[in-house]
Amino acid sequence: MSNAQFQQQINSYRAQVVAPQGLFIGGRVSPAMSGAMLESISPVDGGVLTTIADGGAVDIDRAVTSARQAFERGVWSRTAPAHRKKVLLRFADLIEQHAMELAVLGVRDNGTEINMAYKAEPLSAAATIRYYAEAIDKVYGEIAPTAPQALGLVLREPLGVIGVIVPWNFPLMIGAWKIGPALATGNSVVLKPPEIASLSLLRFAQLANEAGVPDGAFNVVTGRGATAGEALGLHMDVDAIAFTGSGVVGRRLLEYAGRSNLKRIYLELGGKSPNVVFADAPDLKEAAKVSVNGIFRNSGQVCVAGSRLIVQSSIYDRFLDELVAVTGRLKVGDPLDVASDIGAVSSDQQLRKNLEYVARAEEEGGHRLCGGERLHAETGGYYMAPTIFADILPDMTLAREEVFGPILAVMRFDTAEEAVRLANATSYGLAAAAWTSNLSMAHRMIREIKAGVVHVNTYGGADITVPLGGFKQSGFGRDKSLHALDEYTDLKTAWIAL
Ligand code: NAD
Image 1 (spheres, rainbow, N blue to C red):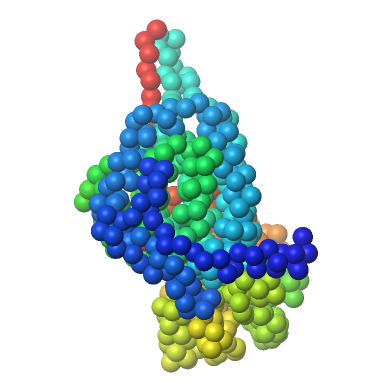
Image 2: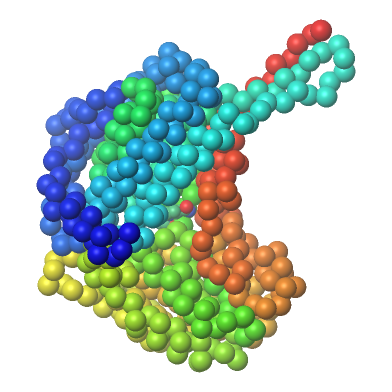
C-alpha cells in the first residue's frame, strides 16, 4: 500500500464519532451499576473523544462471576484444544480485518504515531493470538519415569479466572500477550483496561466474542485503577493477575493478593534501560540512528526504552553530535499523519511530568543538548520535543528514575568494568544493549548486564518467539513465547497404581 492510500484509509476513520462505551460482561454491553462515566480525552487535540463506563467493585464482581460460570460450565475451558485453536485463529483474522479501525481508534485515545501503532497494536496482537492458537494443540503433558508398579502423569490445567491489567502505551499488544496464552489454555479473562486508553480493547473483546469465544470467557470492565483495578486485585475468586504497569501499582497488587486469596501475581514493570556504545561499534552512524529510535519512538513511552545512553569517552563528543543531528530530523506532530515520526504524549498529566523532569535535570547540572519543551500547544494536544541531556551522573534523578517520556540521559565511560557498573546502577533490569565489534565483549555484556533482554548491535526489536520480562524491580513473570503458557496453567500429578 502506498503512503497516500494508507493516509486515505486513516482519514476514513479519524473523524468517526465514538459513541459512549459500556462494560463488556457475559457477551453483552452494559453500563456500570452506578451509572457513572469517565471522559476519554484525546491527546491529539485535548478534546473529549467519548465517555467510558466507570466500573466499580460491583461490576468487577459481575464480570468475575460471569467468567467463573463460563469456566465451570466448560464451554471454553473443557473444549478440545483444536476447537480453541480454530476460534482463536478466527479471532486473529477478525483483528486483521479491523486493523485500521482498531489502530486509528487507539491512536485517537493514546496519541501513538500511526505507522508504529498500526504494526505494534492490531497487527502484532493478531500475530500473538495466532501464535498461541497454533501452539495450544502442540503442547503435551508428561509421563514420569516411575517404577513399573505405578504410572505418574503430569498434567497441565488452566487456572480458572485470570485478571488482566494493562497500561496505556500499547494496550492491544500487551493485552494480547496475556489474553492470548490465558484463553488458549482454557481460562476465562476479566480485563481492566487503562482508563486513558480503553477504546480499542473494548472493540477487541467484541471481536473475540464474534469469533466464537463464548459469553463470559472474555470480559472487560473499564474504570479507574484505584476502584475497578483494586477490586480485581482483591477479588476472592480471581486465580491470577497478569499485570503490566508501574512498580507502585505492582507493589499494591502483591498486597492485595496477601490480603485476599493469595492469587498469583505476574508483574511486568518499568525500566531505566542502558544502551552501551563502545568505540568499536560496527557502524556509529547506524548506532546513533537506532539509539534515537530506541528512546524516542512513541515519545519514550515504551517499557524497554533505551533511556540511559552510556558512551565510551573516546567517541563521546562525535557520537553526541550525530545523535543530536538525527534527533533534529524527527518530525513531531499529528499522530494520524503518516509523515509524523512521533505523535503525542498520552496525557496532559504525563506531559507535565516530563517537563518537571527537564527542570529537575537542569537544576542538578545536566547539560541539555536539544528539546525540553512542549510543541504545538495551539492544537490543544500534548506534544513534546525529543530531549537529550548529556553529562548525567549516576546519582542524578535522570539516571535513576523512569521518566516514560522523550528524555534521554547520556553518560560516559572509559573501561568495560565501568560500563557494566553504570549499566547495572539502577533498581530496574528490563532491557539493555551493547554496541561492539568484539565478540568476546558482546558476550561479556550479555553475561554481566542484569536485564531480561540484552540486545547486541541493535536496540529493541524482538518477536513473539522470545520471552519478555524483567530482572530486579522490573518485575517477574514472562510475557511472550511458549514460556508464557506456564503462567496460565497449573501442574497436576496423577499417580496411578498399576
Ligand atoms: P500504571 O501502573 O499507573 O497503570 C497500569 C494499570 O494499572 C492501569 O490499567 C491502571 O488503571 C491500573 N491501576 C492503577 N492503580 C491500580 C490499583 N491500585 N490497583 C489495580 N490496578 C491499578 O502504569 P501506566 O502509567 O499505565 O503505564 C506506565 C508504566 O507501565 C511504566 O512504568 C512502564 O514502564 C510500564 N510498562 C511496562 C511494560 C513491560 O512489559 N515491562 C510494558 C509497558 C509499560
